Length: 258
Ligand code: ADP
Ligand code: MG
Image 1: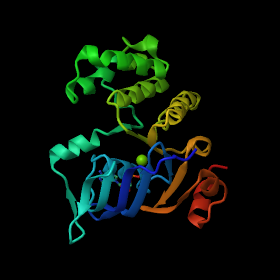
Image 2: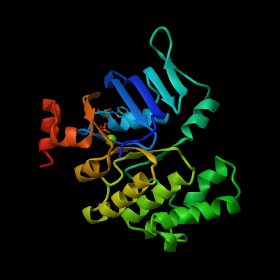
Image 3: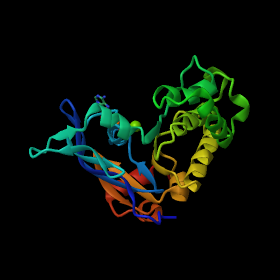
Image 4: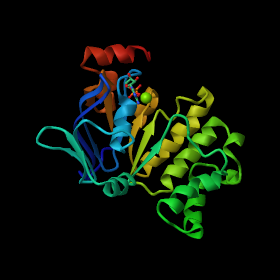
């Protein structure tokens, strides 16, 4: 269901980003409303990961404006060059976003529970006993209550990814960003991770998800954004973009999934 409120959580305007001579984002606009689930699709190399990474400051943009919950993170000066907030403000604003990566990025030397409580303790200066109840609640939510003392190496890929989701949620973000969270998983393990994300959508968590799982996009997305060659080619309701795409590039991309 579309968000009832029009609170804008992410407002990215005319984002440009190059790596050396390689222009990767060429004027991307992206708006995400509160409780909205936005799925970004597109071929490899189209700039999807770079866009997500720019939203939470893992990469710096060259030009454009990004606001998170109506606070500017970066905006253009008169020369259309991106000017960032102070490091301190960037940190504060980006803590509103949690990110889940394709390759889990769990700390291998820490147990599942330690992985989850680490950032709240070091970044948010929460006490261990303060964060433990939330950590355990989140482990329950992702179906891993019995794994809190396990190490990542003792878990399946699907379990690792569910820990990574719980770890991101432990920072109590307002927005969750997912970059191909099931792409590294064996096909039989993708379902449990997609189900976990579907549960978050039902909890009305605002999410931006890069994925090739078209069935999931169709079922869960409020909005689908198709990127190609560093631009947003078209976006709209899943049934419009996935069933009745208007642009030949979208049709060509989708024909690979039939
Ligand atoms: P996608 O996630 O859609 O596959 P990416 O955003 O990862 O696309 O990459 C878009 C383009 O940017 C690719 O050509 C990629 O090789 C290039 N790229 C991504 N990150 C870097 C980087 N850190 N340095 C140089 N080139 C990069
Ligand atoms: Mg990518």
